[in-house]
Length: 171
Image (cartoon, rainbow, N blue to C red; front, side):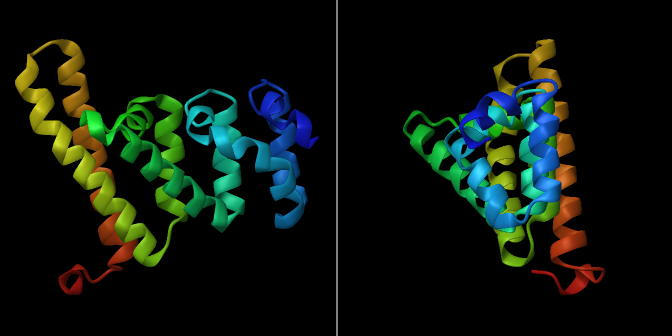
């Protein structure tokens, strides 16, 4: 199963096999099967079938959530020399990738959640002024709307899950 995990997760039916494995097996056994996917998690997160497997893996394995966040930061840092945060932006813009990012927000806890939210806020606030000054094409307008929605979404997670019900005492 491990040697076919990459192919299975991208298959319309095979992805259900891996999701069932994640549901039924303990964390250590399922980690062995999922390890071949680790080098491709950002790519797999933006595909129709494999994104479902990545979401399920995020929900059942807390260590994988941190691994995913670290992989995203590293990938974006590698592109930082060109002043682009390609991977995070691509996941935000991608239908399936945005679900994966939302699952990450749901699964992170405490200071990890706060740091990830602050990172997403930084990414979105860096991009929003830039894209509004380029031109007024539909693509740019759609991006502005999308980024605004994501800013609202991460603010919701920040105040609801990190700060708790009492936002007055949140930093």
